[in-house]
Image 1 (cartoon, rainbow, N blue to C red):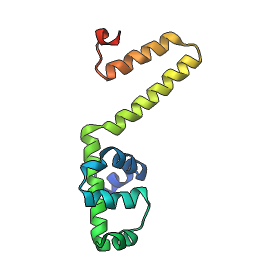
Image 2: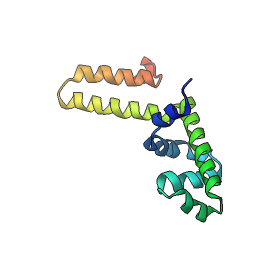
Image 3: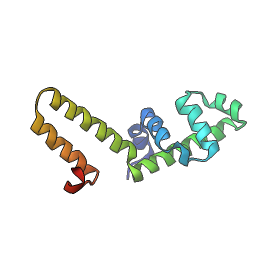
Amino acid sequence: MKNSCEQCERVTHTDLCLWLDFYGDLLSERQLQVMTYFYADDLSLAEIADLTGLTRQGVHEQVRRGASRLEEFERKLRLAEREGALSRALLYVKSLLSSGEIEEALRAVDELLDMFGLSESERS
């Protein structure tokens, strides 16, 4: 089991911003507001406390719990991970097509279709 320090190093600010885009609507209204202020608007805990009426410690707890929930959603659903893999794969296919490697591009597209569970008959 990893300690909390290792988990903090693994999850980046960018990860949390992305997960907030994917899963923010699954948070409570208050938590979404606080997380948006903190991650999207880059406000300090004190600034968020002034805006929301929470204490600075209350804001810190909302951010900590919200980040934990977002990480849990991504661990279970993997939507951001899949979008990243899809984006990289599409860029790879584009580069293959640009360099005239049609057969390799078609194989890469078939792998993408497999990733989405599309059978041969659905591909036509």
